[in-house]
Amino acid sequence: MKIERPTTILALLTGLNFLNYVDRYLVAAVSPKFQEELKLSDFQTGLAISAFMVGYFATSPIFGRLGDRGGQRRVLMAIGVALWSAATAFSGLAKGSLSLIAARVLVGVGEASYATLAPTIIDDLAPAGRKNKWLAIFYLATPVGSALGYLLGGFLEHHYGWRSAFFVAGGPGVAAAALVLLMKEPERAAHATRVEGALGTLWRSPLYVWCVLGYCAYTFALGGFAAWAPKYLYSVHKMPLANADFGFGVVAVVAGIIGTVLGGTLADRGLKGASDETRIRAYLKYSAITTAIAIPLAVATIAAPTPTLFFVAIFLCETALFASTSPINAVTLGAVPAALRATAMAVSIFAIHALGDFLSPPLIGLVADQSSLRLGLALLPVAIAVGAVVWFAGARKALTEPG
Image 1 (cartoon, rainbow, N blue to C red):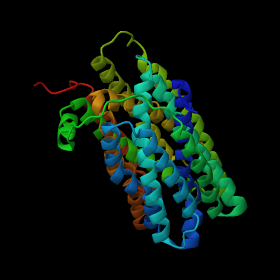
Image 2 (tube, one colour):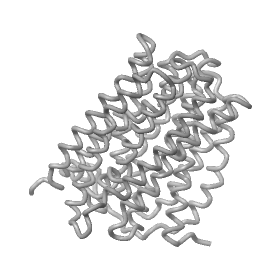
Image 3 (cartoon, rainbow, N blue to C red):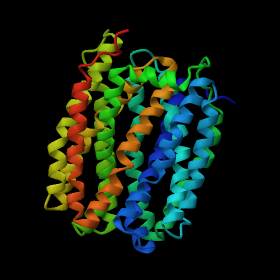
Image 4 (tube, helix red, strand yellow):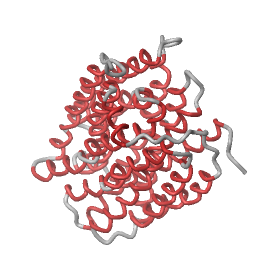
């Protein structure tokens, strides 16, 4: 039996993206507890949260090139889903920082295959003029999965200990990997473009380059909030960890859904019949505007004197940030030739995580060790401002350089 209907494939890929983000943010939800048991500093805890990024961005270019060369994307994704799920379960067996970090690195290798290739399949399947909306559906799993990661992690840690959260989260993905093998992916001709030629083509697309540069700063900020918000509420506002995880999880899912839906609809306003270049530049400008709106809201989040005001500010801030999720990924895919879209997604993933949310959790932890967590979080509004400025500048660039 083959899974052939485009909408069914979209639903399957969205469901797997949901599991992906459950796993990713489960770590932040239980981090205060494994930090206490394993006797980790804030810097070591930040490294454990970020560790999956090492495997993630180190292998995503490999998966991108393999995805562009032939029709084996579903096989690569199935292997990746099975690997990340097994490694998640092994995370619960960690005896110290090294074993925990090693398991999380393997999680990242598995996630890299899926995150690199799934958006390219959606881009191939989506009807013309609806790619942004289909990507918005796929990326709705980001806030929903992230929120469930906090909620599930907080609940399981409270009742059964932090290790149980990893055991429970690792199971479904192993079974889901089999469904990916049943999926019929779109036919795609093999491409023999050399890596050097592919990277040169990407570099000659100013819209793509500026998109990815701004995305690095954006991801630095979003990853920093995701990693440290529960600990901030736990240590600064003195909330019980289960309550902090629950509150932040609810805020993340509601803000994420609202923001992502807005991005999937408002970004297309007035673009009916527009050329591809006009549409892509409009998406980038829209992302710059919504990100700029988040700057003062991020400042208000960190300065909030009470948990209630913290939640109000972070809700508005994350709504504005998530509003750029589908448009900015549409820019990533649309600013390059179709034959290089898996590579373009892979390079983007490498860059935004290597320079973004891989750096922010340990860097914030390092500042917290030396001064305070509030001062560490103050890096995030600055990063948001950098992302907005870069995207505004990028929206004025041409799709490709002349000649």
